[in-house]
View 1 (spheres, rainbow, N blue to C red):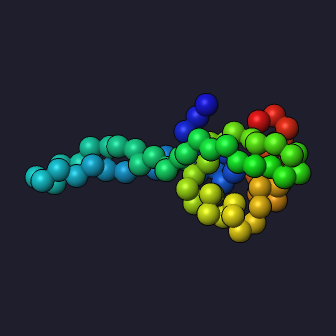
View 2 (cartoon, rainbow, N blue to C red):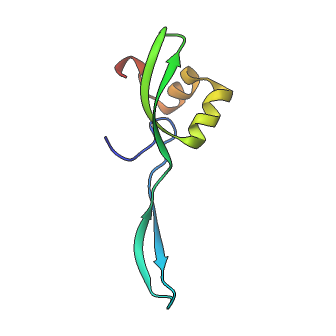
Length: 78
């Protein structure tokens, strides 16, 4: 499974690591992803998703089914 949020699509960002002498080397800034078991009331079961912490906060406001529909994923697979 890739390092990508299943609900929002967040992924790594390219950036520079800057040393004390100001040399720049490329590095990745990864999204803060968590593997969570989330209760899905419409399916009456838990689903296991890899989501970002930002998506977790939004999930509490919108609900799992609505976010999954917006992302275009089928929760029956998870």
